[in-house]
Image (cartoon, rainbow, N blue to C red; front, side):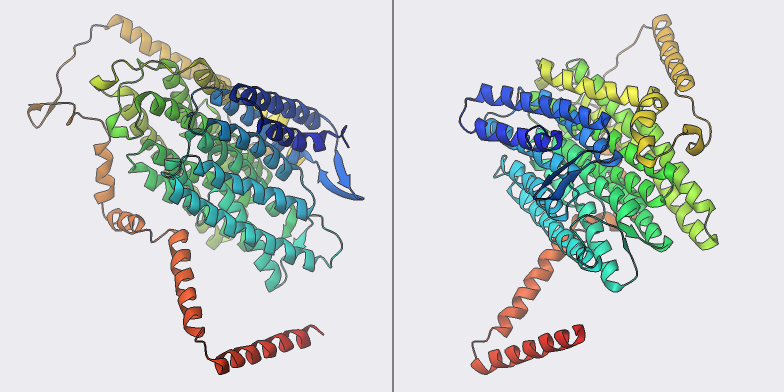
Length: 604
């Protein structure tokens, strides 16, 4: 047992957590770092090895394949980079508790990736969801409401997942507890499918289970936001989606189309909400939702190019969104505010943080040669390939999804122009004139993530596609699945040439005149300076968007609100039924016996 890599990958962080309960803060950091490095080394060994397993009492608990090894590896890579960022400048109020939860998070997420047994899977899945709530509470009372919201939505999805797995177990004729393939041939099988789908959507943050993500991003410790909803939760949620769409269920094309439609809606709805946000954290939170849509859309296509595009975008998103949250976290640590209209001009004060944020913004916007461009490009190809093989009606539906995805990418770019300008490029407020670059570990971790964005974009065929993606679908040739023309080198040359041309023009005409700013013929002050944020307010007043935004602000699209309304209504119904009269209880008891008798007779 103690020599089994899979067992150690889960147990080592738990042991580190137990020891950390009794040691000083500095030892906590070093022990957590050592545990995460150890699990990363073991995950690399697992990734490069053949299929491995770990069992108890004659039953396999953990089992690896190419997909689980892929997820396991990036859970540990991202955990280590984010942990490096967290070694300094985590708030002292909750720093000790943070490192206890961090190592547990790594353990439970590893457990989800490795579990082949239904019971083990639901246990690790539920524990990883509980940690979202615990991380959120670190910043209480500010984050109490958003943490409770995340707990209820994720907890409800855990119940749905448990119910779905129980139904799958029943439909599999009680053969074993392994996750196995179920055909959608009955009402129960469809119920199981959508229960598992909603669980995957809640973890990843896709519509309609997404509303906890922006609120959690706004209130929780920024390091925990970068670790969970930005990175590890995305990996686990999309991992489950990929499992169910490619291995756990047999389904008709209409199911794939529903998943693709939900993916397209996630893209466009969330990016429209991000566009009008003035709080930088919440803006990034909505983009953490929007980008899930590309993953869902790609995996929903059901063809190799779309599936590996969705998985590639999952990893790319975890990389650049973690970088963006950590970059903005560095800004917030130095300035004390997440409000975009209060920021500006920080590129000169925090140049390394700005470079990391710029790379992340270009990546998420799908600008070549960064990684986000290529994964989106693969998703687009997968969508078009699926559309080409369907009838006229489905072609129209799928092409609408394609158009929404393209439009969503354009709006993402517009949103991050706002983000970069308001935070780094507009006029520097005088109160931030003494701001300095963040600590070494913070900007170093950010630049590591930025380097991955560049490497996965420029060396897309040589590294991520060849090493990580093609083995998952069992493809032997890149050209078999990658359509169209794409050369990262040529794009890189054009990109470098454009920068070089800009530098030449600057050197030739570098005499720049600076003028005073005026608003309505009056010189600007600190209170009325142009931040660039106000321009996007016009979007919320355009028809028909104004009405949609009004409904959104009233939480009409928030499943948490409607769940609360339904719970209160149901509680009121039961309150009225609980009259205290004996004959009323006798009637309900009799009715219950009749229902149970009918169910038992139908089962005989």
